[in-house]
Image (cartoon, rainbow, N blue to C red):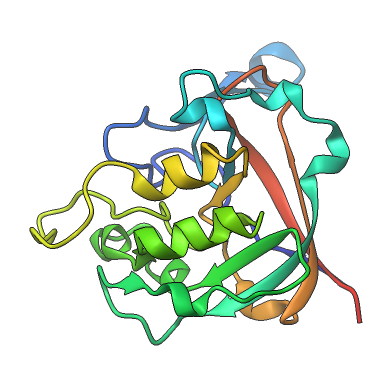
Length: 212
């Protein structure tokens, strides 16, 4: 069975603070032009998307450097729903397993489109390093594996993009804003083909495929 794990692209959708807003509106209509065309404006990290190393690493690769099979991943879902708002996911949650990607299920996709979505759990620096050392790509059902700026941030949180640097600096990929991870098995195949952009990131249609 196939499960859509993507957030829809639509006008006014939630984005990372400071990222370009998303607009989807008609550029041509049946009534005036005899056909319909949508104009889509968005940033490269809108909605459910993949980060390439070039996102945070000056010498990092862009998406066009990867073969398409790189975006078909043997994934393990890691249940982190017990981790609270703006709390770190500890390194102990990172399994020592044979897989391509860890999908951290925080349950924060339920808060999509609200201010609460900014206050998601995040990977502790040690957890991010463990993922990188074991060669895992990482997916989250939240804005970022790092803390997202908000009025609720505390002085104890890591600053900057430590998880991004640990992962992307190791040539791992990061997928953000997944949805519906409860629909897939603990072990599943994740297909997340990005738009054909020579870019630091791009929206994807993330699909979880049952393998059992």
